[in-house]
Length: 74
Image 1 (cartoon, rainbow, N blue to C red):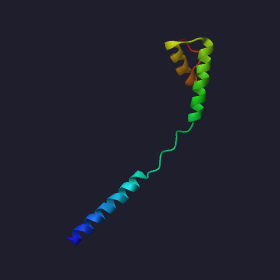
Image 2 (cartoon, one colour):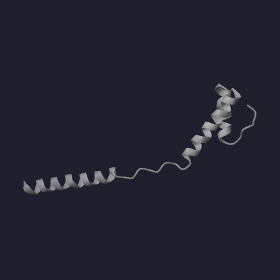
Image 3 (cartoon, rainbow, N blue to C red):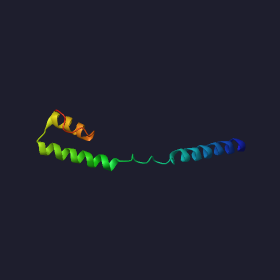
């Protein structure tokens, strides 16, 4: 009976250690350029506001602006 208890305790301890190691994985770093993309999106929104765009034309303008294709036909 004692051997069974020791084996069960050992298995439980091993599982606890493995679970702790699995949960301690490092978090991935944020994608580079995230702040730049936000600044670009904000600038494109300002340009769309200045042009008075709303709805689908605004979305198309902002998409083109963020790709660097401003000045295209809407």
